[in-house]
Image 1 (spheres, one colour):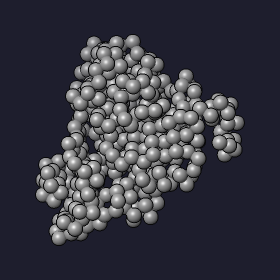
Image 2 (cartoon, one colour; image 1 turned 90 degrees about the vertical axis):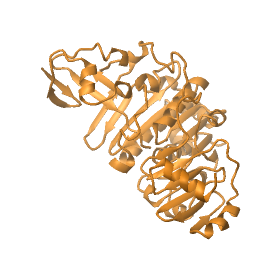
Image 3 (cartoon, one colour; image 1 turned 45 degrees about the vertical axis):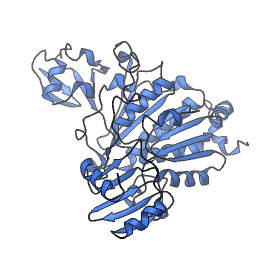
Image 4 (cartoon, chains in turn cyan, blue; image 1 turned 180 degrees about the vertical axis):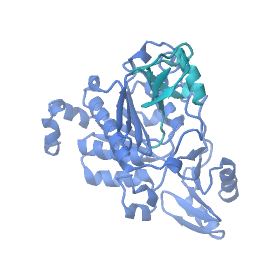
Length: 66
Length: 342
């Protein structure tokens, strides 16, 4: 299936879990915020949230400078 | 106190004279006065926030001037700590407000004292350990704080009002691993993102301090000025997931010193800060002649700088030191022990 990640279209396995996507991106669930279709998905639901065709994801990694 | 200088701000309906008077009676704590802190302090001083307390652990360097708008070349030449230079500049901008300059590292031992009488906390820090500490302290003492961070042309900001909004730890449970995120050193930074993020933070502070807390932004703002992306991430769904260790279970791991460390590699500096909770004060006038035999030394009443091999040691009267020329805490500790003493 196709999803859109941070504005870029990409392929993903059908029903891929959000937690699986983060692992494939080498991102730690506890250190990022993830929005699916403009709704933030609480961390506790990352492991059960399965992605659907056409989902638009935004993964926010935090920046620390100041 | 006459309010003439604020007439344009008071004409703005949501502020009015009522809001202005509240600003004048309020106190803000600005944590870190580098790039973000400079813009925040400048804006809040001009706006007439009655009392500014500025805490910063660092001193000025020439490469700060590209983005740290409160400072000039003479401040760098004078070797001033940022908090001291900031206070002098802010008092020229607005002599009717009170500005406190505190040259210190912000940590779990001193944060309660620094928060006395404070109505809003502004984040101008450069690291996540301190932000998690600010989040704990904000919740523990029921004081709103405004997170801000930037790197490259990218920035983020979020306002945390205890009891009203999700907290920082609802959003991100663990600080990024050291070395896992880009720093000013590796990714660089362009000044406009600083000014945008800090201006949003300052406006959030104006809302809180003028009695308009209901107007604060409930979303996380994420910006990239180079890729032209500006987004509001809605955080409502975080409020009903009751699992946050900080704002739900009130486990303040950073405030209670179960988390966080005393030594830190400074963002973008190729430098390590060493702090000591038990150390007795250092008399810089006595240390200077002792070190002069080994290398070049300069000092003023706020700090001493000592050049040895490829390193620069900056020592403060409270015993704190910034060791430039290394990112290795062990190397920094060795140099400190060798020249300043354990």
